[in-house]
Image 1: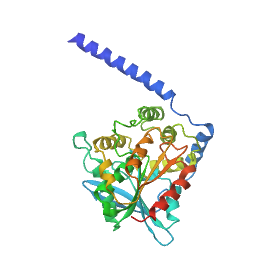
Image 2: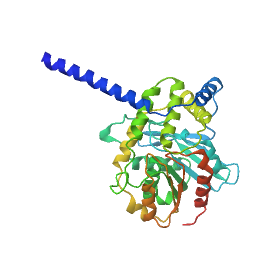
Image 3: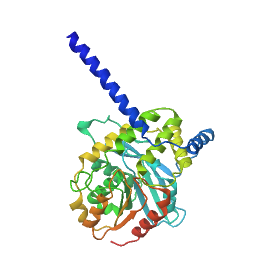
Image 4: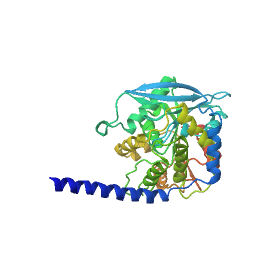
Length: 346
């Protein structure tokens, strides 16, 4: 028995040592922040926190979950409503305000919300793998938000996992969808004919967490958000608005509930549970737009291109020099394409 215990302890020590070495090695490959970027973060930490929630807020209750949402209204005559659905592990504030403003200026109200277990959204029961919620469940969150605001139909826009949720919403509730825009998404992440989601992104994201702290200081958590953005850019080039990202992150950390990193695991489980949607999407008669970055390191652009082949009436936009994010340099092009879709007749 003693021999077994001793052997077990040595194995645990060896495992921890090897794991530590791998983490340290992996951390070395995590993108670094420049001196200028570090200085910008310091400057943001020294001034009053900038307001990041500009619209009316509320809570939608669905199946034991309380979903926080924000509704920004245009100053011009209202043309319609845009519902924004963010990706895996992200909350409402991940949507850049300058992106939202592009729709407000054209007369559209905009709704964004915190996914389950992010931001101000809460759950009555603790998440367990045996009773994990699905993307179908998460699509119902969107329906209940629309019901809460007494909005019958909206232009549904989702990125990454949000695009998958948007697809399911359009399939199950086509009467609530004025148009569907899926950005850097997929109709079947397990499609054997396509390259799978990147196996390198997740380890890099985890390494950034180890490097800058799972909880960490405020400065460390802000750095982590920016480094994660750099990882998702992949080979794409371009400037990141570090000051705005730092201001938003600081607001999230000090004025809201911060970041729940475990939510990404739970959302990924929901993605794994999802069924292929090719056939169901091909039956839709609503306007559809597929957008994808050609440099996407997380979800290969081939996923959107295959779906486009199966949906001959869909509009497409393949953005050069865009990774798995919404780069500032491409926002005008993306917004213009979406606004064109919103006026398209069924």
